[in-house]
Image 1 (cartoon, helix red, strand yellow):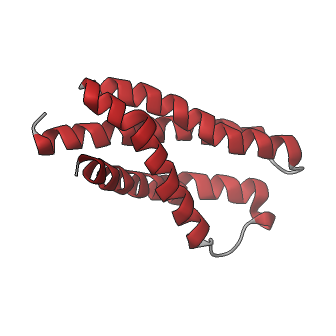
Image 2: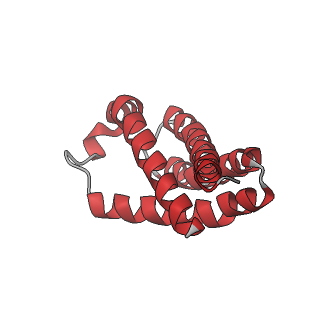
Length: 134
């Protein structure tokens, strides 16, 4: 029950927060740099697979240990590290092999991955603590 609750709350935080960032910051940045490579409409199935799988990993590796320890800050810190690594893997690989990839995209997206993942991990723990009273 706890896993399901923290997972759903973390997915909701992730989707709401990331969609706002994608809409207002990341899409315009990426369109300026690599707009000629982007689809007019994104493929939602691969995005959903990433969102659901990534959040499952965050909850299992970061949020549940922090919840058990009753230390939400642990979730924020470890989530930020995991987010920087995950987003960095994509960005640095793309920068290494793609002709039009720009360092500004790398920096912004890696920082965003750290902030987003730290926030959702922390938020999921705090919401779960409030709901279950621990």
